[in-house]
Amino acid sequence: MIDWNREAKRLLRAELVRRQIGYKQLAVLLEGLGIEETERSIANKISRGAFTFVFFLQCMKALRRPAVHIDLTDIGE
Image (cartoon, rainbow, N blue to C red; front, top):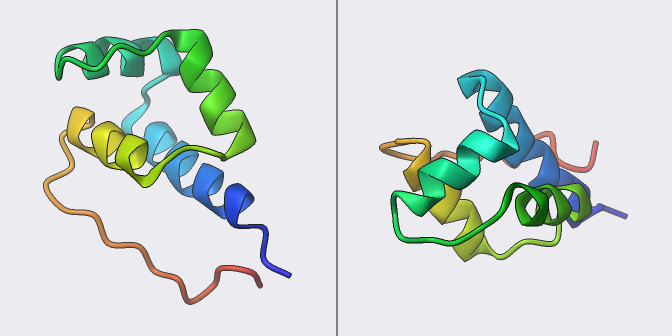
């Protein structure tokens, strides 16, 4: 059975690692978009993997990702 929360968490964490951005810096970037999140709230959401797709899109926008492609080929394997 696929753990979708784990997969969501993995995707978002991977992007943060690629960009060398921590939760505190992500909170600042989100604030620039008018989104109020604390370092702690971000850490909790990501550690659970139980965040909304809206939150994921907000993070991608804050990270200045012009496009997002999610390859589902290896998910669950």
